[in-house]
Length: 192
Image (cartoon, rainbow, N blue to C red; front, top):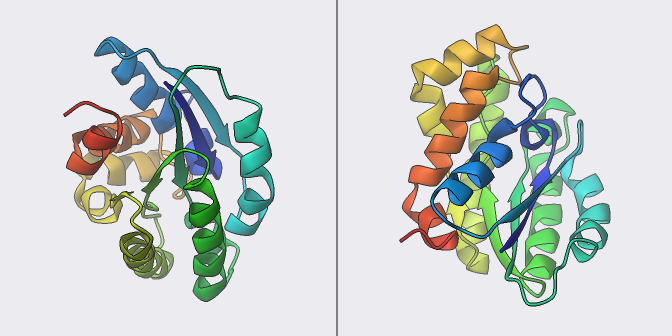
């Protein structure tokens, strides 16, 4: 299976000295469990949803492998909030991305994560709830990570150890574990 992970610097794994971020850890765990996986981390720093919309399809097409299942994992929202993009604009772009992506391959949306600032985290949490509603409407699987990462002492410490937006390596590990423990992601990746 080919998995393309699209998103901003949190998908990229900025601040993780191993360079794995959460997508690399998810891919590694799938391989450890015996899956035939080629994972591509296509996160870009400061990539708001509108920029992601302009690039994802072209980049996914370049990574198609004949005869292999193709999956698209998106994670967006934090860069939008940090760059003061109105939530309605982010949601409109997310709807376009997800609708188009469904014609291309199997799609999963991993929700946005908290940051060190409470006001910004509240805005991200609201956006996460609205993204979950959008995914339900579009019949796209959604993995909510906001509440688990808000409650995770490891993730909160990792934000403090990082720059308060991007966690340290242990935070990315906690996030990857959260994703892989979700029933939605396990079904999506063929683990259950």
